Length: 464
Image (cartoon, rainbow, N blue to C red):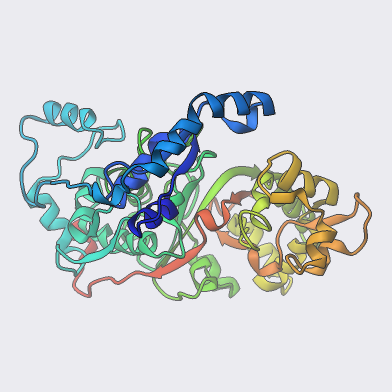
């Protein structure tokens, strides 16, 4: 779609051919690029579920004519989209609480839960917690063309129930979304991967973020409201609604923020996730994950006893996502392992660093080569050519460890190197459980951003 718009603006006729389920997203992408009528030709149904003859018949029945029209009509850059949106402080809704809720739902601004009405006074108070001018522009949303401003970030933070003291955390996440290396434009892909924010801050407890029992469950003010803000912000600024850019087949509810247990990390001398990604001190990291699963009742008093089960958990959660090792990505796959504090302490007590743990997991988180090849080729149809791992090694696309023999039953790793496995520490300190997440690769690559807390922030006042 984006390539077609660029070509059209250069005076070269172009058209994007999409399946029926992506027609709305293609047109919304065009609108985000400022084009009123983007050149689109639609194939009914989904090509992966059609026989060759059915695809040919559908193509000739309508798609072919749409392609011809798009290539012979005036380039759509002459049809620039002109939109007018209210100024940041213009009132758009008035009335009592119930009528405001109904209007927000009607306009698609709500996630279905009651929202805090974002009055000018509330938004101004939120902005004051961040240390930036309200009109400061972080980026232009690639999906809608809207300016990503501090004011728009604050509006959605108020709606989500955040407090002004949370706003520096919210701003850091917004900066991550605006970073091209994250790939926010992919936030609505069909598998419904959702962003998970990991918070690494000594101020977490003061801001009412929990890192203990139920760390991934709603219930704590900070974890819940900031996680909800992310989904509202994607909806209202980036256009991720079901009639625009959100094409999730099933989807999930928003993920609460995961706050790491810094006390445990300091005790055992392990770095935080954000530090692993280049940002020490107060910081957030974010990545998009497709699936999550518990690794329950981990048994063992030594790393050697514990690691095989953890590696098995990482291998079990990794399915079609492995196409990000090669295909949809190039070594981008970065699964996340969340260890309960007691597991992290047990492993560290035997002198294991996080680096050594990653190296051990790299050896144990493996699957048969034949299964890997089917997951990235025959079963998911997402890697062009369906080449074998030995072919990919021969061409230098993946490391030699993937072709140490030609035996289809040989075990191969799920990542290209140990450093690709991210490890966090959180959860009930008395339970020997872990959690694993499969990663959506370059569709939401793992990055970190520093949190800039204003020195005058009084968290007790803001959270009162």
